[in-house]
Image (cartoon, rainbow, N blue to C red; front, side, top):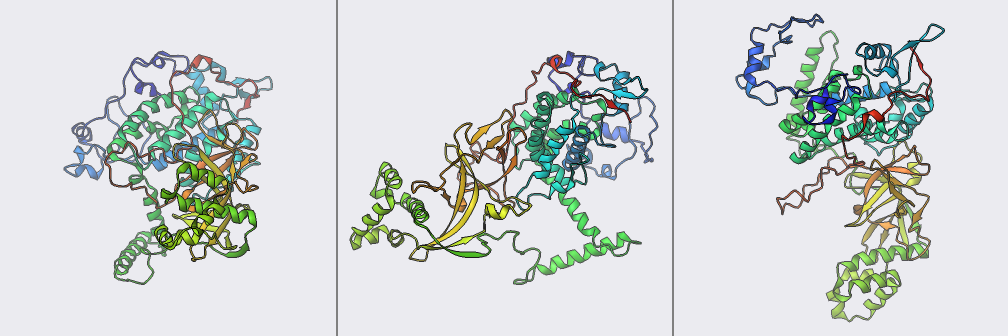
Length: 599
């Protein structure tokens, strides 16, 4: 509680008593002490054991003095201690899931929390009462889910399938019968917070509860971006107090633990320390886990870890001198580029053959437009480009054919009728699988999208991977996809939260006609995965992904980064955070849900 201190001084929420702690908030945010002030507070502090005893008034709550303050430069550091975003995110997700699902031992909405509301005389409609049978009851809050709402929420988490290597299988942690979720790892909470939970929340509770939670998910997604800009951090610094204040009037005071409160300081630390990827605990935890596995003598774990660390350093040093031997530094990536798997020889039918030929020749000819205009090219490609192009090449003399190029002359004959079909293909470190293979897997690698220049984005599902061969033995791999109709509200739409919804019941370029073009090159597509929309049947939510170890380094020709769209490169939703919500119009209690029996 108390996050109104970070709002602008003239913000109307500062004077709102009814929906906050019952008092006006006229003070400003606390000032961060400088190094000299901290050294003065630490002067004379001796390390003492943790205690819950209250300190005398005026005494600073320092339980120990870190050895880092013995360094002569430590007091001059602007960021002396880093808030770990990994554990912060994990604790926030635990609080949200435990409270929404009313999980025993994890919920922050219990009898003690309701008694606190009565003690501070806040939200009288949520105060506990005694029934005629002597049992203590308390009304259902606005964030309390019914059994059906819990099932719908968990069903999304249970049915979600992400690309291979994207995250662990979250569905194994979901228990639909008990309406609980447990056993999540830190990275599972990371994926749920930033990707899955915003989708699952839609359609479960009222918009007054769902919108602030989705805004919080978007905030974590923003600060975890690989590229952080000062103007975007300023925007986030203005938004997070509004988001926290929205959560204050929804959840009880016990929800706002110290780990939830530190969210307000994350933007400041990003300004001082840079992107969170260089400061969070994922690589440290992974390294410690590797060293813990080296323990063989449980009676002396420190010695075993030291011995394992020494052996690891020694092997690393020796591996630098091994040229052709496989080591941890030169091992092959998880997905090798152009990896195809098993092959199957097929014979192209007439329509498919003409479609392949039309698509490939139009791409080849687009780089040699000196012999035809763009308007003529579109007409020929749409009507009878293949036959026109072949007759055009046949009429050329020897000198013109040399000028045109051997490849284009050979490609005029078209591809061979025999082709190779694959079930998987790797390009730019991304694994793609056909839809029929994906249905048998726990992961999803058949979702693709193509973004056009100054045009719409096409979403599809990969159905076939075919490698065609021309008479000069040049090979091309093409993806045949089922493309959703991009017409508004027919096969594509955006909801009120900015999610991209796709309906594959309405398709375009199905391949039934020769003029259809269901094929794309592998380097033209980006991978997406689809999550079933709990609000709209037959619709799925498209979530874009970015492959590992692939970075957009730019062309290096311009120093202006204004045109580099790397901040929202994988943003699935985009909500405008506003602070003009009328609190008096929000019901804190749900009258359509029976009261809860206190346990």
